[in-house]
Image 1: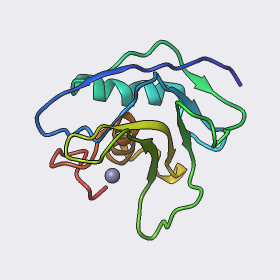
Image 2 (image 1 turned 30 degrees about the horizontal axis):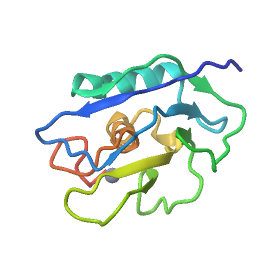
Image 3 (image 1 turned 30 degrees about the vertical axis):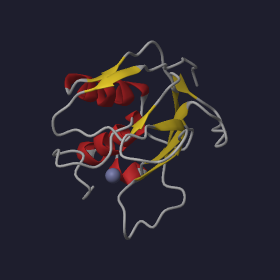
Length: 151
Ligand SMILES: [Zn+2]
């Protein structure tokens, strides 16, 4: 097992059909948990898809960890299926967020941490995985082909 650090920095989300629901204010690291079959190269490929869609992500390094501390902040953790209803969903992304002041249409939701569960059986389902990674980067559901709510 090797250790690298992946730091991403999301500067701006493109307008158009993509919708930004949440925002990282710190640069999160990405951790691939030991129960996930996703590789470092896969993650680089998924991120580069979103980079081409003008979701700006700067990658400096990547992390495959021996243990995922689910209480850790400023991290996107990728794991195999753990605790959602597989008869209803293909995959699951939980975004923990907060906001300041009163909630209104301009409220920016700030991301604390993200847990992404992608069952190993879906490892070649790029559309599903890209959708979940999109959520992890702060994208919400929209009419976009990848970010439509059906995935
Ligand atoms: Zn979704």
